Amino acid sequence: MNSSTHNKTAHIVVLGGGPAGGATALGLKTLGYDVTVIAEPRPFKAVEGVSERVVEGLRNAGFKQALANLPQPSPRLASWNGATNSANTEMLINRNELDQGIGRDLQAAGVHLVHSRVGKVSETDEGFSVELKGSDVAQLNADFLVEARGRSAPAAGLERLRGSETVSLLQYWQGEPCQPQSAAESFEDGWAWMAAWSDGTRYLQLTFDVASADLPDKAQLIDHCNAILRNLPSAQSFIANAEPTGVIHARTSTPILCREAVGDNWIRVGDAAMAVDPLSGNGIFQALSSALQAPAVINTLLQHPDKRSLAKQFYQQRVDHLFHRFARIGRDFYASEERWWDNPFWATRRNWPDNQPLHQETDPDSLQVVCMPVVSNGLIEEHEVVTTNDQPLGIWHLNGIPMAPVVRALQNRDERVSPQTCLQTGLGMSPEIAEGMTRWLYQNHWLKAVS
Image (cartoon, rainbow, N blue to C red; front, side, top):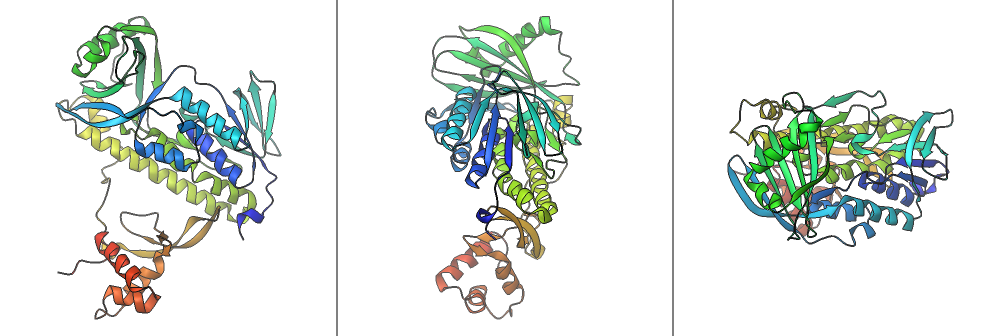
């Protein structure tokens, strides 16, 4: 049954108004739910470098006003393992402005937006009670709760997998107006990310290993960080004719995976479900990856209690898969820095989370047709998919064509019949579609190349 025919009286409260919380709220509103988002302004100004892929993800999530004033891509310098590359670019966005734009998108879609700090969250017989601080409303009740407060979300006693404990120290500098630019550089005890805005604001962040960094106490921390920056070649253009302003902000950047990211009446999305090492540069993208799946999961949990186990299996599998994928990206990048092989910062990170390759070449003999949960019409349903050694979660469709019948037909064909002919005669594909499908199957190693 199509999800639109179900009763949507449940009130859903989303804690957090960033990309993950906003995308989840927009998706739920599209499905017909009453949604309230509780958003608190960031405590300090933050800048992030994002790629065009991140922008496309935000656009696909339904954000419009949040993307209205994006800057042009600016140069990004990368100095790693003694080599310097200036070929890449990124957009330097003000996260406070992005979050404000997300808020406007939510209100335009009819989502209730409450600007407040979240206090105590209590489970009740009916759902949840959420205390609000700094708002005209003292308390909200929710039938379903979405935790989207990022890394700062309470652990709530849930089991979590943690990578190497990592801290990032951020300080603002102020200099002369300049062209926007950013840079990343590795050093013996960690790595630096630096950004400059056109108004002269510099954003300088150093990332260290908590266990081995031997950082000084708070009084000497600024001098310690500044001494490192003055020895980094990439930092010179950022600190020239500039001075540090304000205190240092310490932020945890430890990779964290929540082993239980969904329950019968709650779900964790974005960094609250899994937070990756910032080195991967995929923070907003991975946050959206879980958030875009969440509305269908929530819809199933509320409308089809008999499919709760299926919905929770679907979501946890994808959160786990995404986390390990991004963790391996970071691992391989850390391993590419070979100058300080024995330094604890680099030694621990180049071997975590495992030694599995990021990508495997697909083995045609690994193809299997199995039943797995998928998103279908705003719900989680079980369908036949094709799994491979490199795609363990399976592929359901390709350009609208179910892949299970394709693989089954090819596996049962007479070897004297060509794959294209098999698809035409066995599945009724047109010659053009069968030819294109056959080409894709060979290119992606689903068919063994003819020797």
